[in-house]
Length: 248
Image (cartoon, rainbow, N blue to C red):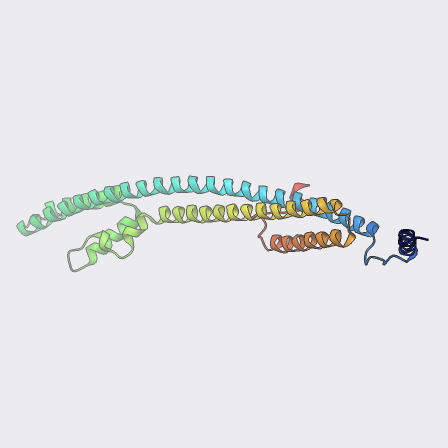
């Protein structure tokens, strides 16, 4: 037998031994891995749909809060204008009262009691017809002071004109802030959706790997990303007023 024939016989024997040798079992079977992949594909698809839906609810709340904020800001501007007009009107009334009081002082100096009483009645009539309760209180406060003061010097009185406007403006700011938070939460849910899509991609390409360990390695990476995405998602606040039962 020649050397070449001997070499061929040895190669054949080695191939037969290799085939007859028991193959090393993988730590996970292909069937189990495929079942796990199918399960996690379904779970990820459901989570993706959930994140997309909640993100859209945040977007709806954002639009609603922005609209309410704009309306409240518009109301605040109207209240500011009304308050300023009221302030100007009260200032004119006070100027009129001041003029009458000056005339009353002159009449008193002349000893004209009838004129003093007449002017005093006019002042009372003006205050009764043209003054709000708050302004009347401020006017009486000014009359009671020893020094020459105006009602507008009373602490907090001028601010009271704009109290309603300030409250409405603060409401507008709060709604705007809430809308901005809804916008941020919606964007965050969109990011979570992107991560879920990456998980779906990884689970989808596992089939191109022939080696089980390689498949399992990709599967583990996908599962880790999925867990991180779920942890990230549950930390995001739900939409304001959200109730799952209200949709049924």
